[in-house]
Length: 292
Length: 241
Image 1 (cartoon, rainbow over the protein chains, first blue to last red):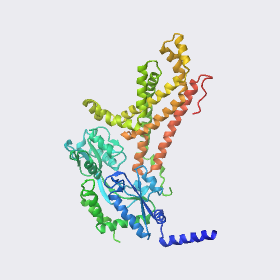
Image 2 (tube, helix red, strand yellow):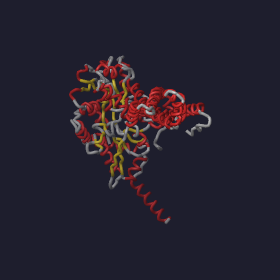
Image 3 (cartoon, rainbow over the protein chains, first blue to last red):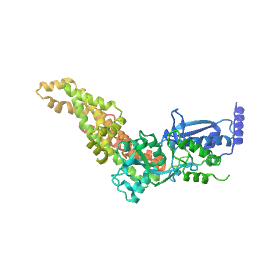
Image 4 (spheres, chains in turn purple, cyan):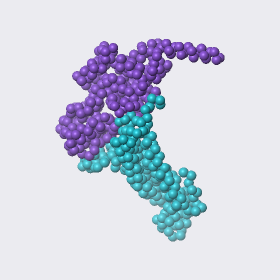
């Protein structure tokens, strides 16, 4: 019996050694379980959301499926299963650090503060703070917000940026920025005239406007007053896994697939968001397509 | 958990420290004001359910069933998003745009009215636990119904229900976290905000948990004192809460 165990142990050790020389826990886990677990959001349209068929989908998900494929090749696995786990902003960090999910594919801004806890792949989407207003409101930029009410989702980078911008430009809002729980509630505040403008990433605002009862009623205004680069999130201390991810992203860009994925989801995309590929994002793709 | 990067000192940095302090303050303020609404209102409704007047009992029962049976979260939404739409136009505009801290007052009102339905049930059960003979004896001695309540039923009834009332008082503190769904920056929502800014999820929520435990622990201590001081010798054992 003991001999059997020893033999089995030796064989598995040999197999593992043959497959890879890895330094991060995530790649090791992927190799052992032959599964990549992708964390996604329910309603970050069209980056990461649950479609009408009940499956996770979106721009970020498509990119992550390619990264998973790259991991399969890198580890020379005969098969690789994909598992999806739905996350909220409150559960994503614990689940990532605990190893429940291997990669989070949604719409998170890459910040230095957040990088203390987790690690980001190269930027695959660029957006920034703008305002969603009624077309007849006369608001064209944040300077027009004197005496008006501004709403933001609690804890977002947009809320932070809006506060800085309001202070800098000396705008006298009516009261403090109203903070709500999610996009839906922010939109409800606008629709009920509780607020005059909603500050968020422009991709979110275009998505909300296109999904509203009367899309013609709304417009997204203002120059960007913050830049929000989105990236996939992985656990820290996983240099090999990050390399697999960034290399897969580079290959997608070089092969032109990245632009195709973008067009599939944004021009106009299944949710009719109609957000053409910006020059900035195109340039970003060129920059992060690192030489081999 | 090996990959988690503990960072406790960040909670002492501004603005995060200030957020926790203000969140904790808001939580306590919401709970105390809501309780100040719930206790008298709940007592009145509970009393109404024990009177001999059918219409008063009907009102009391309707109130309790309405507020007790609808989830608190749904009530928050109704008070904040639906009720202002039903008001006349001027009032609606005032509530939505000119009233200071609309989220805060809406949350306090909602939580107060909800908790009142629970207090009402405690008060009713406290009074009904007293043998009916006492009420009749009081009336037979020539006391008015008001005097029966004032001198016989309420003094004993309130003493009996101190332990379950303590639970409802604690409930107000814990339920106040639902105020975050309509945008009140109380303790839980500030913890969330810190988590969003720093990703220090465990530190922020652990701190919030400890603060909740501290304030509820304090409430328990105070209520025990109240129970001990108001005890009638030989009638009520000191609660095991």
